[in-house]
Image (cartoon, rainbow, N blue to C red; front, side):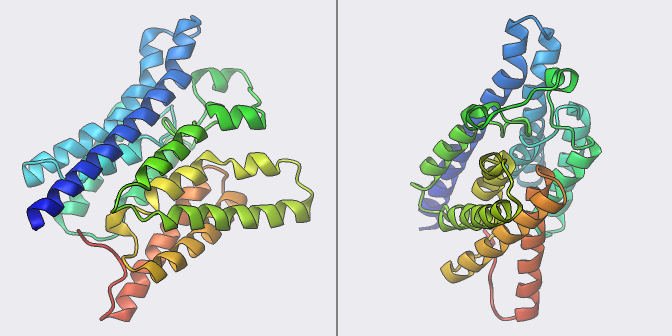
Length: 286
């Protein structure tokens, strides 16, 4: 039975890996390759987004091989971290930091999610500058349609909202994916954004709704099996609180890093609840 379970988990992990590679390839094209073809960047500069995105994948693989002598979940965790990072962060720094944090978390069995902590740390280490090499030199203003079609400003692999929603549809077909969490999280954030924007007569309502960081965190970080609630009713509460805290972080801290900060606070809150509840288990541990 456990062997069958392990095979299903490994197959689902491969689907996650494929989807993340898809997002990374799009980010590589949008933020590097397209500018190389138009002769605005050298090949070395154009390759940087792809190398940065792969830094976490490589670090996670090393952690898995050193500690477990086989691929576990750290290669996915590393990839999920590096795919959201600012473009001016170096490949070497990203690789070292991700390796150290994942190694420590696994070695000492720390049960708090390393996704939010590592991402936030590296984002601010990179001065939270999510503009690519060209956007940093020439101000580019994206319209709502541009953002939806994948031209938004964000981390290495989280600029295409269409691709992220396609990933969501595919993940929802997997038995182990907690599909209620992303829908409720995005729904809660969207409702609060609608209310807030209407009260402030904000003309950027649709751009605020199409926040690629919020969508990425909701789809990939919040439902991740090992760090989200097991039971359905707890998942609903978790997602609602997550949507509220992500909204607060996005509007009152930063429109990109705020989504990760909100998700981190939600993750910490549920671990505190679990500790205080003693005999009740809320968080997955596989």
